[in-house]
Amino acid sequence: MSDKLLPCPFCGGEAKIISHGKPYRKVLGGQTYRTTVGCSICTANVSQAAFSKDKSCEEAAAAWNRRTNPPPLPLTVEQLKALNAEPLKHWVWIEILDTSAFSAYYRTYADYTDGKEFCCGWPGVGYSWDYCDYGKTWIAYDRKPEEGSQ
Ligand SMILES: [Zn+2]
Image (cartoon, rainbow, N blue to C red; front, side):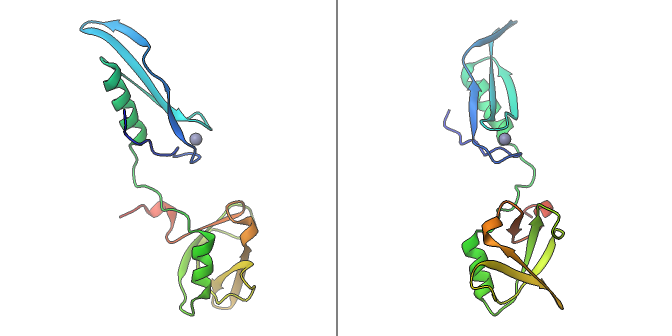
């Protein structure tokens, strides 16, 4: 089984095969095997049973890896600093994880904090978020996560 397992859709944790190889149930046609693929952090998992060990593994991996639209990846702090350094303004989706503001598209401003905070806002309203809190209270994406990948 060499198929790569995608990270957990709930917490981003590493996925692994949790159980494999134990006979599961005798049924007409042979011995079935069941495989579970799950998250090593939050224990979210999928199970699949099939007539052979390899097949159960393949099916569990495929079931685990099946996704709807893959979510956009968060921008890195380096990418955000580069955007703030450009005179050209960009729209960035900021996901707010506390109650300091609300999640929305914000337009980049030229950096006035010397690389300590990400500067953005709308005409007449400026915001800046501390890079120290990145991933804790705010996360930036190039597009709104719910919009999917099309
Ligand atoms: Zn997880």
